[in-house]
Image 1 (tube, helix red, strand yellow):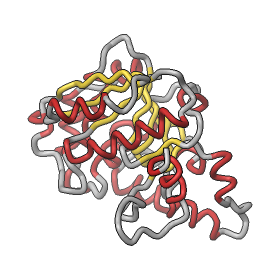
Image 2 (cartoon, rainbow, N blue to C red):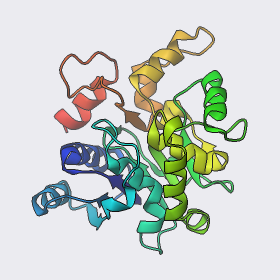
Image 3 (cartoon, rainbow, N blue to C red):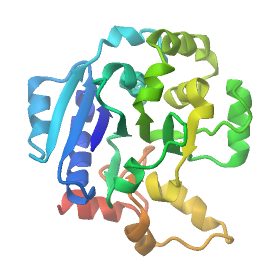
Image 4 (cartoon, rainbow, N blue to C red):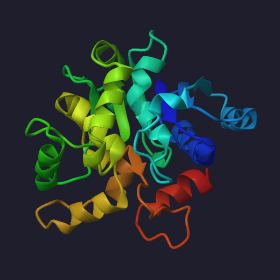
Length: 265
C-alpha cells in the first residue's frame, strides 16, 4: 500500500504518530511511504524510519522555489501544495497512492478506501461542508455547479490520470491567477484544478472530525453515531483545526482514539 505525506520538520512528530496508528490498525503487513519535503534533516528521516520496520520510507526532496508566490502562512505552510504536484514528483510506476495529513489517525483497515474504484475521477476524498456552502464555493471559485469542495486531508490519487492532465505550469498559473479569491488555499486550488473529477467518499467513515461528528448528531433525522459506531465503522479520524487531543484544553469525543492508539499503543 502506497502512502503519501508532505511535511516540514515541524510536523515530523505528527507524521510518526500517524504512522504508528497505520501500523497498528491499517490492516496491511507492509507499507511504502513517500514523504515529500524540502528541509528534513538526516535526524528527522532517521526518526521516521525508526517508527516500524513494516514501513519502507522514501524521502523525496522538492524544490520549494517551484511554489514561490503561492499563498502561505504558519497555518498553511508551503508544503500543503506538494500533494497537488505529487503526481509529477512520484515514481512513474505507482498507479495510486493514499495521501494523509499528519493530524490524522487510522483506527480501522484502509483497504476498502485504498482500493475504491475511481469511476473515471482523479481523486477520492470527503467533504467537510454542507450543500449551501458548496454552492457558494462554486460561485466564488468560478467552477462548474455541483463541483464538490473537499477536505484535502485524506485523498486517494489516481496517478496515471493526473499525470496525463496536470502540469506544474498549470498549478502555478492557476494558483497565481486565483490567489485573491482563495480562503483555504490548497483546497481552493484543488477545486479549481479538478473539482469536477473528485469522487466523494463517506465523511463519517474516511475523514471524521469532532466538528463533523457533532454536526451530524445534531440533526435529529440522522441515526446517532456514538463512539461505538465510530470504533466499528470509521477508518480515518482527522483532528483538524485548533482543537486537537495532544494540545492543552482539548474538548471533544474523538480524543479517546488518540489515547488508545498513540498514548497507549
